[in-house]
Length: 67
Image 1 (cartoon, rainbow, N blue to C red):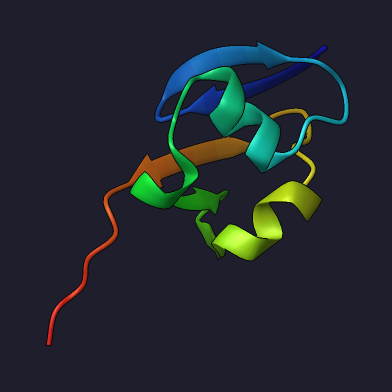
Image 2 (image 1 turned 180 degrees about the horizontal axis):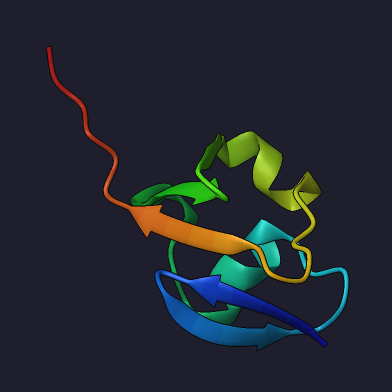
């Protein structure tokens, strides 16, 4: 198991879980949120390839659009 935080809340994930796995596990629609790991933005197309590691701090937030 891997210990991370999701929006400040402690979480335990199976080893080698990706950002996409985390969102699916919590029922978060991938298109509904923007994501960051340790303060670094993770684009939607990178989530399946972003493996979460022990101690990572993951944040989801509403994407901001405008003009």
